[in-house]
Amino acid sequence: MKKRKRLKLKLKDHQITLNEAANLTENYRDAQTENVYVKAQLFGQEAIRALLDQSGCIGVRMYYGLSGEGVPRLVLAGVDEAGNDMCEGIILDKGVLCPTECSESNDLNC
Image (cartoon, rainbow, N blue to C red; front, top):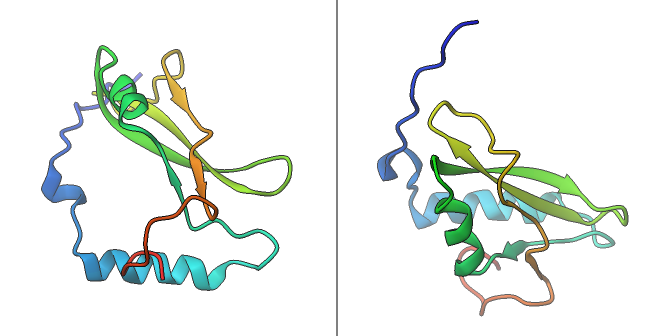
């Protein structure tokens, strides 16, 4: 079996401008239907830290999911340095949905 090289994740690899983020979130909002509409999900810092503080965790992979009621969900899993999901560790879902719990209007959500 071929050994995977170690992943190195840096801020510059992920950081985008507010304008780029606003365009992405606007495209997503425009593609939603009125009967199933989720703008965002909020995860608390305690949950995110617990995920990232797992031994060997170097990042987070976010999967798009769909609840049994058809509501979009995010599933967050830690990733190890080989780039594999840490399926035996902490896995997050149940983020606070927007709507109903949303930020004040800003370039990302209006």
